[in-house]
Length: 201
Image (cartoon, rainbow, N blue to C red; front, side, top):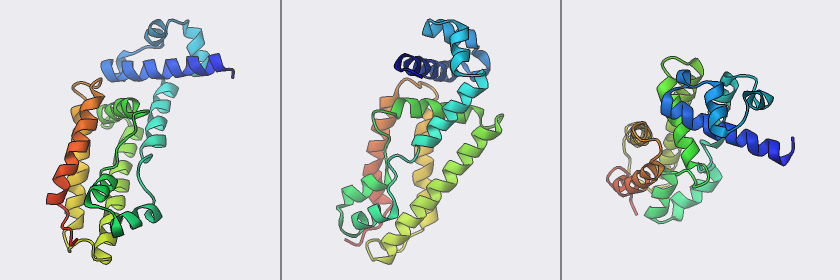
């Protein structure tokens, strides 16, 4: 595939993603996507065998990037041990980068809107909850074990943090183009973490 082919596929993907989010997957046709991109429908079928394949690409994009900013254990342990509170908060409140934030919000929008009718969307949603709870549990347990945090109800606090992040994501359903709102709200949530995490020092 040459550079132009790659660019066209990216245009198709980005256009379909926005149309699926704005109008609902069922209400978007291959012709709709082709018209917005400004190409023939045959050009879309050169890159994607069906509309379902484009949707699957949307899901895969989310799966590929969802943990971009989530640190591995050997990366976050030094931060918990000796980082400032702000650094610890930032590690807990991992944020998507500028490069992927808009598409991440839109794919999450599609997952939320389809999880009651689409098995894969539901599986992604449930897996995201399970993985996030596991990550937060391990993170906080380590902090308690080394004496950085006082003992506290880790599952409850983890659920609060995760619920807040999910609520922010779902709030974008109203205005999916307002991705900056999600970033701002996520950053502001850092100021609430001291009320939830009992630091010893």
